[in-house]
Amino acid sequence: MPRIVLLGPPGVGKGTQAKVLAQHLHVPHLSTGDLLRESVRAKSSLGEEADVYMRAGRLVPDDLVLRILRERLGRADAATGYILDGYPRNVAQANELDRIAPIDRVLSFDLPESALVVRLTQRWTCPKCGTAYNLATRPPKVPGACDLDGTTLVQRADDAPAAVRTRLAVYREQTEPLLEHYRRLGRLTPIDARGTPEQVAQRLRTALEGRS
Ligand SMILES: [Zn+2]
Image 1 (cartoon, rainbow, N blue to C red):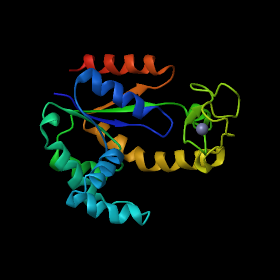
Image 2: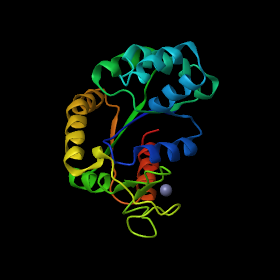
Image 3: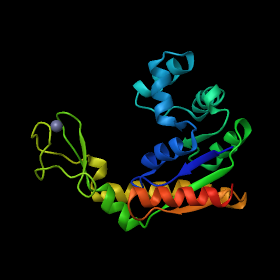
């Protein structure tokens, strides 16, 4: 039964890999960001609680995220396994998670910082329709302009190079102890995230088959 946590820095392609892997294993992909938004949309009592924080632009507290996660993990489709994405983010959360849900494997995507900076600074967005482009993997047909409406593309402030380096430093600081925690428990498998999404997906499947 695959109960998997995915870890990886921004820009590593974790969300894409999570979706592909979830389909391959026939288990749900549970992203905490999506779960929060869904529970708010569904107007569940937990969702209404979370909405108060989200509207105020504040982080939803750990215990509330955990209650939303526990509710989701209790549904039938998660009974044969799941892929968690976006949780835990630190050792305290990992310990909380262990109390409510067993985790068999932690797959951690590795990519050199220089490559992450290149990937992250290649994200450009259309301010009019919101379409996202990537100069390496999904470039606009006309450089600098939206394919759909021709609007000049813009870069999000936090995708500018200096901001990207800060985001990566914050990620490393929070996540290193978490990686060490799962390494000590013998659950951590590093995944080389260089190359195309197909190559990375293949490495993921190989890693999972190697020790199932
Ligand atoms: Zn557009």
